[in-house]
Image: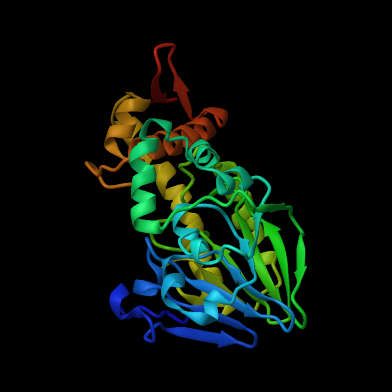
Length: 311
């Protein structure tokens, strides 16, 4: 694995950004190897078209090599993946059709997040910290979509769960796969938005190894994998986070029956007491999805007054 973990401030970034090249594909690493709120920037130098996958904060400091981008293919839509779009007003932007409303308008983004009660505060934060601006000109694509760049091409593999439209993007013939927010971090999978799905994420994680890649680029923190066995080991650990969360949730219920609100207060994704505009909603959706699986399996039951207990 290539892990560019050198820390640098935004003011020092231009000219000091770590990068690695695979033929016509370049990967630029954001601060702390692209740890949120930054990310990794993938650029492709086609003989006919220059393309980018997503546009994290680091895109604002790359300079002419990024600013020459003519085509942006979004792997999914979140604020940290749109942070450089404002620099490319004339580029063609493509988004999976299930994330397209979130790219085109703030209302669409709010609906995808499901945090309408915090919309005003969130918008101000995104505008301040991520240069947020919607792209009403964005166009939709579907699973299997391809873009020819001249001596290079892009193929889309729709792997939802993180968002409804989350997609892995493969550059051919280099075999470089941008896995986006299937990022293999120690935090584990995130499926806390209104448009997220634990069930879809499970299926997507099972499908990921089938993509014919030689190199795997994560959005955040892990960097670039060039060894398939290392990639598969970290993927297995990432998948295991789902079962770890399930076991922790069941341990909470073995201790005593609890309502959903009580479980949310204990936190499953974040440390106890951790706060943020999105945290309660994310915890509620995450825990609810695990509870739904446990109810379907007959391992948990719920009373009429909303109290969950082990069976």
